[in-house]
Amino acid sequence: YSLYNFTGDPKLEYAEWESRMDMMNSWFTDMKSENRFLYERESLNGSKVVSQVVDPETKEVREMLNFASNDYLNLTQDTRIWEKVKELSPQYGGGAGGAPLLSGTMRVINELAEKIAQMKGMESAIIYNSGYGANFGTIAGLLGHKDVAIYDMFAHASLIDGSRGANKKFFQHNDSTSLEKVLKASQNKYINKLVVVDGVYSMDGDIANLNEILDVAKYYGAWVLVDEAHATGVIGKTGCGTLEHLDLEGKVDIVTGTLSKAVGSIGGYVTASKRLVNYLKYTSRSFMFSTAPYIPSIIAAKEALNLITEQKAGVDKLWENIQYVKERLTAAGFNIGNAETAIFPIIIGDDNKVKEMTYKLHQRDIFVNPVPYPAVPRKLTRVRMTVTAGFSREQLKYALDEVEIVGKELGVIPQ
Ligand code: PMP
Figure 1 (spheres, rainbow, N blue to C red):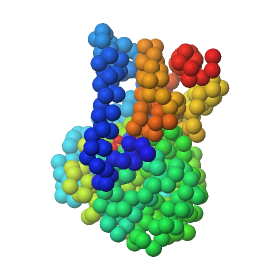
Figure 2 (figure 1 turned 90 degrees about the vertical axis):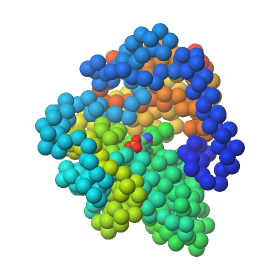
Figure 3 (figure 1 turned 120 degrees about the vertical axis):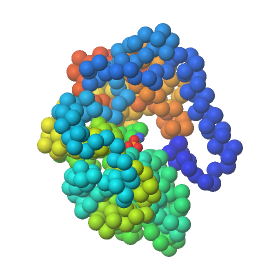
């Protein structure tokens, strides 16, 4: 089990929680006290992939290649989007000034919802002010104590947190046989069953085995929810995500996602049938009781999605970069699991080596994130490296040469 799985579990003893939190704490404190771990980015200095980072030890500003961002298409830096925000912001203003069911729903929010529903091949959508809120609020709004959420064991924390008031079960990652076992055992025990998966897994970069999962779920009369956080703008012929990629548009019941990754803004969404979306409007508390999103971020998201679907957002460049990184990491002998999108886990399974590798890469101005236990299971601790469209081949080559050198130095790959 990873951090995702036990987050919010009411059955956990308090002492158990404390020890786990201590563990996380000591890991990060250790890194910081040694002035090793870089958190704070200062600016982008006009570049899409080079971040200025303040060195905690010397206080000097260093320029680092950012391999830790979810801004897969670098749309946070896209001047076409900024121009749109400048053009439309005077019309709409900044904050929404109210919850969605009071005064917060401006027309531009509804237009964005329509665009997303269309991209996902669904009837209707609503916009939340974060992806976390969308996932949490959808599951919490739908399931009660007689229902069960059945999660892929690598599903995101925001999804897992949503079933606090319901029953919760897990199946082995991407394994439809394991799902079937859980569904069989749940058959006469619960009223509603909701199978919950990520389209693209945030720590592993692999894609949901959705064809098989859907078949099994439908056989047992379960609903299916897919979180498209890391898939939208990355996979699918026109960047519409997992359902487009697998030719399954309209086949799942609920599609959620965030506007904060390839879309380069902030906010979340849920798409489903008109009836279900309507139901959520009045039952999903993170929607009802929270102010509608900041309007310039909605304008930005809408423009970003237009660029993505019109194929002007550089998805093809992102894929060239993904292929190159995948080839290099594989050829060097790293264990990258089943990574097939913009997220690459360099799986090491040894916290000290994860720390050391992160530190050595930071020294070489390559910004990556360590993922220690309990964020992922102990045997699967890793350095997480993400790729974005804006890297040049020279930048990637430099970084991957260094990753290889460090991997050899630490015995992560053979000499
Ligand atoms: N789902 C997944 C798979 C994610 O990785 C994240 C972001 N960490 C979220 C949902 C939450 O999205 P947001 O950051 O917009 O709250």
